[in-house]
Amino acid sequence: MNKINYTHSDAEAVCACKVSLDLLGDRWSLIIVRDLFRGKNTFSQFLNNDEQISSNILVDRLKKLRSLEVINYKRNIRDKKIKEYYLTDRGIDLYPIIFELQFWTLNNVSFNETKNTKAWGKSIKIEPKEAIIETYQKNYKKIRADKFGF
Image (cartoon, rainbow, N blue to C red):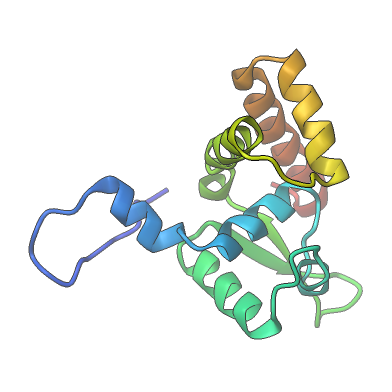
């Protein structure tokens, strides 16, 4: 996998944190990646999530994530109009970041948690972080292999 070529408007050196935020720092990109880990993989499934992303933003973020080679898609075999998105290896590598954001939130913010968040919160009290991260990544790779053949 080749690295993403990032160029900044000036010739100055740039902090890695700034680069990652420039590339992936909007909430919708990470929510799409999160949703892919949760088994959603079509435009309509992303559109009908709890966060209510607008269709024009969804189109933009899917294009952006695809151009960064974080996601890709295959056409549905029964209906060629439907694109079924999946995480590339680069996208799967984002799970530790999603994990840490959720972990920080549960430890530092009071909010009305979804069923998924509550279940996830229980699991992180039982298993070590590394085991959960590894399990999510391995499970996704298995799902991707079963559904898409790689």
